[in-house]
Image (cartoon, rainbow, N blue to C red):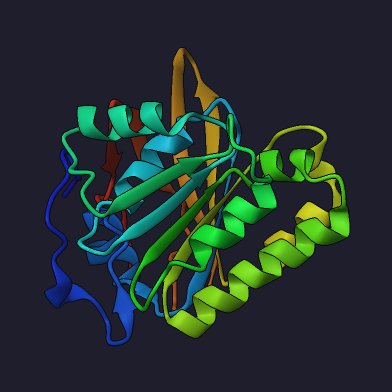
Length: 229
């Protein structure tokens, strides 16, 4: 079974006290949902179309606060709509042209979430480069973690590998605080480029040890033909 288009999540297959990821392939065949109050870090190479992963993660019937430090909000909205998704309930805010600091925007929007909401920060690395005080960077993320846990919401933090942020000890500490880790990796095989998802960590949940093949040509496809026992 593969995910060819945006679909309505099948909540009947989720485990108790979990929320849908918005990706049927992950929900039905691998994770059976994300535990309430989880912060999930998404680590990827910048060459990978990780933003397609973001767009599917917001495709739930839950409100989403989406903060971007890398792209204007109007372009993100256009991309999501071009993939056939409905943006109702998705509030997208970028840091470009704002008089507010990136820290204030991040905290303002995480402060708006309620139980069951989604929160996306895209990307943590870019925010790190914008924040002059590394300790303030960590304190901001701790506030995000605490709010998400307290509200029983779900957060996805993109740790796209942007030098020199990727090697920072502050970035590594932020990754270490996450309840779950999705690692998107890319391999060149002959003339083909293949993308895989590795689930490296997930609080209160068993997860597959094998890599999951992901197709990222305009739409996201999760290969569920592998042995997932």
